[in-house]
Picture 1 (tube, rainbow, N blue to C red):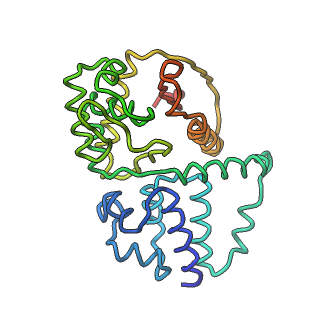
Picture 2: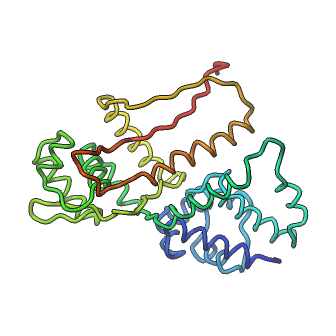
Picture 3: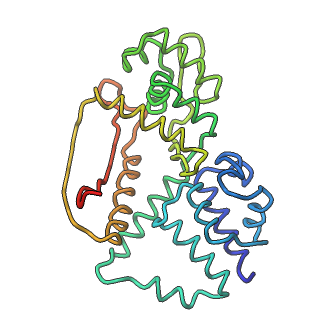
Length: 285
C-alpha cells in the first residue's frame, strides 16, 4: 500500500516516545495478542511499513500505546494511516483546517511540545510489575512514596510518612525490590524512576483488573486524605465540545509533571494526588 512506510515510521516513533524502546517490548508489555488481536510479526510488519492494520485494530493499538483518541499523537497516526490508504493527504487537508473558535496555533504548539518533552522521560512498567505495585495498599503507597522521593530512605521514614507498621513496610519493600521496582539494602530503599514519568496503563482488557485495583486503592487512601483545592462547575455542552474540553483537562493534569521535584526538602514539600473527573449528571440515565 502506498505510503505504508511513513505510517510505520510514525507508529515506531510514537511507540518510542511512549517509553517502549523496542517493538517486542511494547508487544509483550501491553499483553501481546490478547490486547492487540494480532501476532508479533504482524505488528512488526506494520512498523516496518509492510502492511497496514484494519481501522478497528488501529484503535486498539492507540489504546495500548496510551494515547487518547483526541491527542496530537493520535491525529498524526490516523492522518498517516489515511494518507497510506488514499495515496495522498489532499482531502485530509480539508479536515485539518482550523474551525471557528479553535485554539490559537501557538497554544497548540506549546502543549504539543510540552507533551513530547514529557514523553521523552516516560518509562513503562510491565504488567507483572503493575500487578505487584497494586497488590495491596502498603505496597502501592510505599512505591508511590519512593517514586516521588529522591535518594535513599529508611524503613522508618517510609513508615512515618505512610503510617504503616515498619514490619509491613519492610515486607512491601522487599517485594518491590524483587520486582525490580526499587532498590532495597538492609534498612534503606530508593526508587528507580527519579526524573522519569511512569506512563499510564493502556486501556486494554488485559490491564482492566490492575486499573480496578488502582482505583480501589486510591479511593481507600483518599477517604482519609486532606483536600487541598477543589474547583467545580456544572455546564451543558455537546459531545464534540466535551471531547475538546477533555483534551485540555488531560493536558493540564499531565503538565503537573513540570512542577514535580522529587529532590525537594521533605520538610517543605508533600506528595499530592491530582484527580480531574467529569460526571454526566443530567438527564438521569
